[in-house]
Length: 196
Image 1 (tube, rainbow, N blue to C red):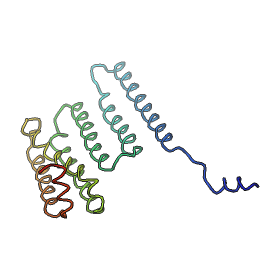
Image 2: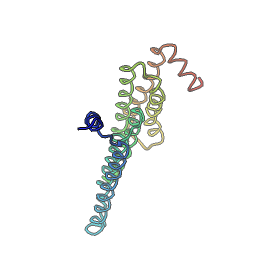
Image 3: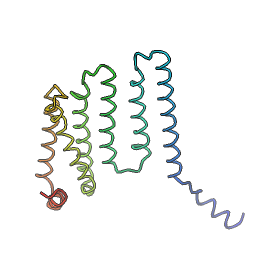
Image 4: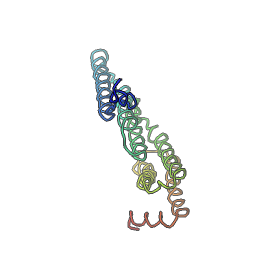
């Protein structure tokens, strides 16, 4: 065995992970398109008067986004959390609409989804205080999203006040907590970013 062969045994063959990730994303996209188009065709051929295909389209698109953006992507964790809130909300609205538009998604699920995501970002910041600067923008985005259910209620898209009110209160308390317990550097960064 030559010296070069011995060195080759000690170093694993380099695999281009980005190419593998890109290929997995394309395969996931193809499978999603296959399921959606197949379901649409079956729906139109068998029961064109009942569009049950939306029960499949919403979850399949969500899983596609989950795999391609959250699992395979190298995006920031804060970005992934916000994207999940938006994607899950969209999927729930599609399912709600397909089920008769009773608005259960807007009334109850989405407000508590926003609370959960805000709590997750808060826990990440508390567990990794050195990384608070990375998550400040994402936290502020979650706080803004926390007030969205109230706007939905005021615009009569949501008819149940208490989940929207709880979400807005949680967002407000999170903002106050950040202002009270932040160190001077974090407060200065907050002021600098948002020109307060």
